[in-house]
Length: 311
Image (cartoon, rainbow, N blue to C red; front, side, top):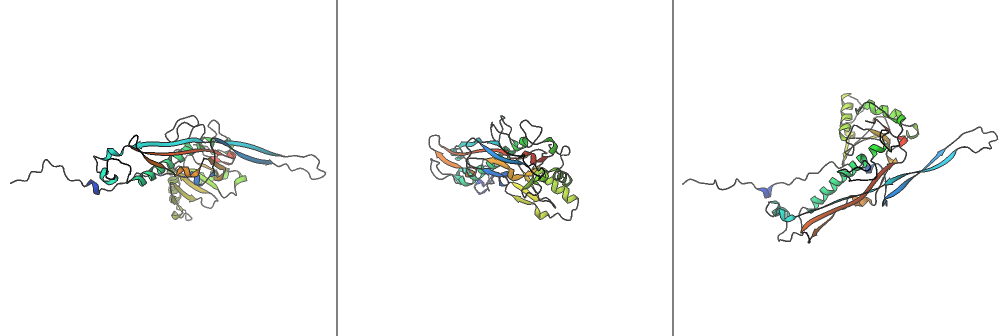
């Protein structure tokens, strides 16, 4: 007798299959900059500057010079991720066996931890994109409509509302070469030349382009082990200079900027909001719901101390 199995589907042990989570390169520019907590809507960065005037020291009788206080405002934008998923949609799939507890009331989700971690990971990436790319009044997939600009506009002479001076620009090549970065260092104000927080910020692609340029030059001083892959960031030291080079997912253009990173101030309500996910089962909709709610905004204390290729 012949064996007839044509009515059966080919075997696929889906329950034994490995589940891979699509984690992305998150980015964390906020590790390098100053963070101001407790900002509900808008707060100023208070700035103090002295214009010192030196005059002949013989019988001085006329006071000269000035002490000036100014402000640059940080406007934070409320940012929320909210969604609900119906776990019953898994009942007909192998995921129902792997992820759900027995019973028709799906109040528990075995993959809740991985789900929460992935939500935070995606939100972290969107935060870096927001800090750099946000355009005031324009809607975006990483932040919605907001009243504040991101760093790419604040640190650009070609955009409305920017404060960086044209004389500080390095206009021209968009190549992330060691020579071009050195040109930017030469143009940096000597007033901040000794700071320990001098930082080049660029895209991940530009960072890799720079590493390739250094390698192709066979520079004996370059240590490949100096390139560190931190969570969401690439970092290395600038050879023979007191500056760091950082590649961030927040920049998606040819722009390269250089300046004192701690003079960038990000405002938020509470730092822990960025890593807190509220996950609950809503019996009214029979859904597993989540919410991440934060506030975020950014400004630069002294943009005149920054240089850019303005690409």
